[in-house]
Length: 334
Image (tube, rainbow, N blue to C red; front, side, top):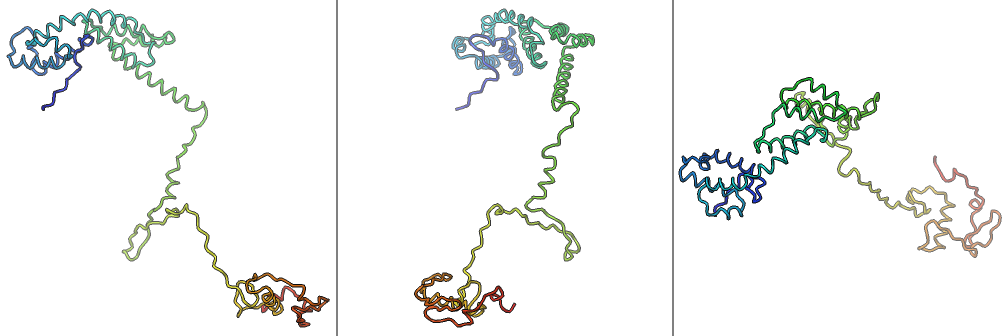
């Protein structure tokens, strides 16, 4: 199924509110397609042009209007009936356009561009109704609607004697933009103060030191003295944020002679009387006793007198019992 061609512009509504703009668009498109004679009183167009013009007009009508004028087969007749039906809209739009033009004031708008846009809307409606405003009338309209606080400025513009309205609007737009920039510069910081430095003024230099891989040139004699780029490893790798796991401490060897860690029995330098005490404690506590725990059974100590000690009923040698230990006894051959 062939696709239906979309309308070139807005279709004519049943109310006829857009008849003036629709009529202007229709005339322009028909003239562009060499079909303008089909809607005039001249009968110079042939049957093919009339048919194409009729199809184009009906495509841009509302569905209700297409039904109402279904029996009309001549484009000139259809154009005349639509004109008779909606041509009175000029008399309806004209009073409203004149009222808007009379009450249109520059001081009612925040910017010159808004005032200029609204004024041209009114002027376009007046032109569709057959009334055209001159540049002198537009200039008088603009000068007479300045705000009361801008009397001096209005007189200065009046004395410049602008010839066209468009030139006046260009000057007003330039002055408005200049005033906005002046106010922005004034509100930027207090008068007499210096501008604050930019927050990221040196960010580029700082970031350069933290790049992951930064090439540096080095001298290589194997390449004929040429310099080559060598990537520098980054201190911030993908795993630099991870916490370092503590190294596992292996079990140190324990001496079976004295029970002290950090050395073996064949290299033990512990004095003999400490070794005897340790070996005696192992016999009393059993195999499952702690390596550094010494338990003394009161029953095994028969006599504890001055310099007369016996362990397990066996008296110690006099040199062991009467020994007075010093710091140097723990370290030999130093």
